[in-house]
Image (cartoon, rainbow, N blue to C red; front, side, top):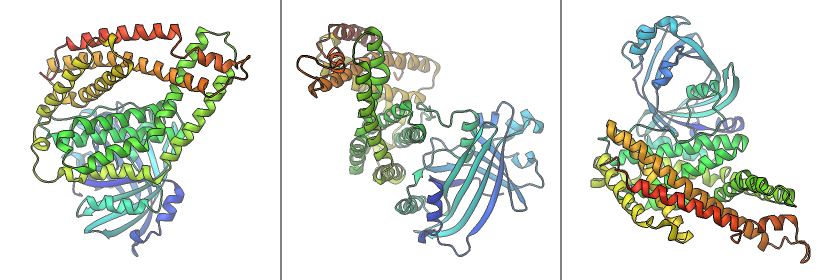
Length: 519
């Protein structure tokens, strides 16, 4: 049986990418082998293995049948560090005796061997070569094939770099070198995870941020790494969905993931401030992704604001002209987003972030903040943010729009912090207060967000009017008339804003009256 640990860096691309990499000088191995892998994934009827973060497979390769159990790689983004128990078996059926000393044993004892059933399969052509890079031995595989299920199939093109011996940093070094020759992206789903997502019909659907486990005694540095990798995983999952079908919700979730990541940099600033790379990466995230905000604002206007205005004023002339004009602008904005996603700077940034999280200078030497308990660190951070929100949000109705926007930013940062740090306070009372606290923050954020959307709609309308879409002095076009009705002079819009401010003020009061879950 092999060592029960696997450290692997997964990259994804397209068929032509793998063809070009097959002859890459860094992957040269005179003894490279090729094989056909036919793999069946099994689970119980209630998918108890998958629920426990395990996958069980039988792989036929040549004359061998290999049984493999793998544990999940928490918040995996590129680098998969997971348990692996692998053995040859005599026939086409799983051998549960070989799993007696694994995490699956209790689950399978309860379910019984007869309860296992095939769920999906992968058929893959694999090219395998053993190489040296830096000071490490690396097994590089190029996989081309399909994931096949009763619900449908999807193609699969992956480069896997598995550490045989040495330093995981060499995996990243090799990945960066290969990325200069082919547009590779960090993988976030194992083959098994792709199969489960496909049979559950969620592979191509936008996804919200997933929860993750943090032990209360986790060092603050490890907590930051877990949070940052979870944000990047959230980002990459939705990037793949957006690239596949341009779903506006996927773009929205990408922006949420990026905001959460930038908030993580801010929340953990005390343990990052000695590392100059941290601020450079944070600034690069903001700079590279600016087109995402323009596209998202147009999505909200076209899909939410404009339909509401049409319903309020169905007889307004020129609505189709306005819709077509803004739809054209959205196409241009989406083109700018895809120019970012398809560019080498984006792929390099994501890889640089993961490399920095795993091996950056912030991890070196002794650090009181990095090594202290994440629970204590979180309590201090959350307390400071709560005090700031309490102070800035006083008399919310009297604040200028720019001041309310700053309150919204603090509220958003506090909410992300509460979501990140919630697992550090698992006690029953703390968990109950956490749920109420996050709910109150959500209410405040929703009202302030609606105010922001209204302000953005005004800005778009003002820009349309200022652009001179007036037809003539005597006969302005319908688009301009409609847009003018959305400007800040619109009494109804002002009334809606006033109602939202009142609701936000009430939500702020309810929040500050709550007992924080971290005390």
